[in-house]
Length: 251
Image 1 (cartoon, one colour):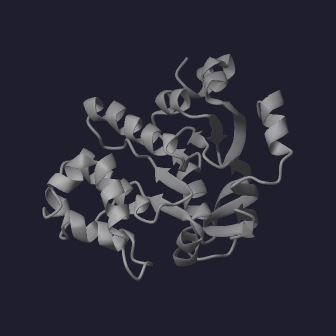
Image 2: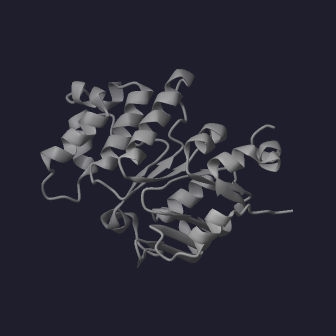
């Protein structure tokens, strides 16, 4: 039986209309293939939200739908009070949202500095303070500013991809599987850096294969299965839910 966990705090949150991001009854997919059915989720200002679930659950499709990269077949998406349901990605990025895809998220033949400039392509002039803020958060990027991105390690490329997304100082950062492909000893460091981004005030919506770590770190989480909402709640509550652990977290 499908179930969505609810809590008093979540009920109060859902009654508000001032969510930064509000996804309602979303049907989406690719061409004639429908992947998502009636998905609901929201992110509040400064909140850290994780979407987890088994392979094929539709997690990445949620992310791509929000950013205008999937075919939306029904439902609505609102960001900061503006309906963005039918906006293409180039317009979505202008409203205050940045997206880091799972793969092919940097230009390997361009330098670190050139990648960062491209990250801020919608600006006529890139404020030096913005670039320095990225370097302060990821010092290795400043050390390698003239190095081709393709010569960076996997972890460094992921930092560069996040740095590019932060060049526009977004209100919401979308992260699709940020730990994918990283060596185990780098995963905790990547999560620490995401924590720091969120602690600085940027809301985060993250799709993540490492469900236990994602739920341990986030404020709230959503569990998807077969393109539908199954569970929702605070991260620590989902981790402690016996049914969630049995069905989706390996016991």
